[in-house]
Length: 336
Image (cartoon, rainbow, N blue to C red; front, side, top):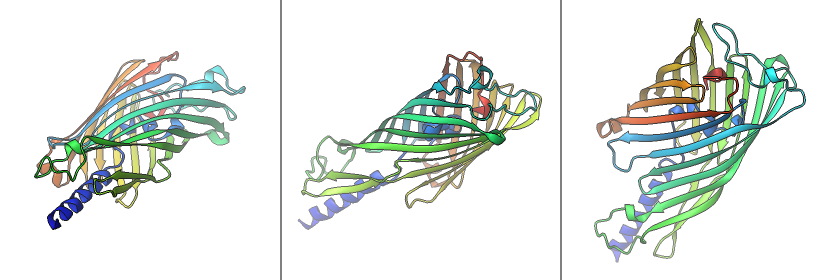
């Protein structure tokens, strides 16, 4: 009986680690689609934007994180003061600045996020609707605020947990799924060639409890995830633009994560750059606008931690579609 008790404690610890390890997924190409973590970008431009992405983290490591998502958002209404020429500012060519709609211009936007993530025996499926308001202020500032609401399905697959005795009754069969409400909130500020954003996913801790055969439960929490980001569009020469961008992420008691990315963009059609995640990875980003309605981007990261001994790196792809893009914009202002 003593051995059985220790096994139960060990399995409970395993489940706790599995749930806590990486609560919500991370991505290198969030820099090209910040909407996935910030609802304030809902309908930020005058076309419908649809993105599909897949990330395979730590290639070569069994049960490593892999994430897929679909996002879609579009403007749904404009204020009375909006004029046609101000609805979608074209990308400023050469060394010019990104144009700003007149003060008092506002619009509404709406969108949706569908995300599926798996890490080891844990799975997270998120479905949410988002809405945002955008207003132009004096001094060429543009301010956006957005909210998201939906559902989170958190699943623990006991059939993926191996024990010394496969038929050991300590673990239940199959899987256990929990369905919880899911929320997000964010803000976005733009002025000229600068933009910065702040957002939170799951602003209130979500309680997770998995029953065990002993009659108890393994408990955990989905903690709030905070994001801060800032970027600047710096014209280097005619048709050449440099985009430095920083991401700061914090979730629960875990150490903050800092990402730095620098991209060079040519003629709104081709871009490439370097990505560094502090003490975690180093990689590159490539992308191309195949037309005014289709873009393709790819990112690779090589781990700088001890995990490099068992992994060849992480791969991520992002496919973007634009609908009703009447202005034939290949790359929106600010590079996203």
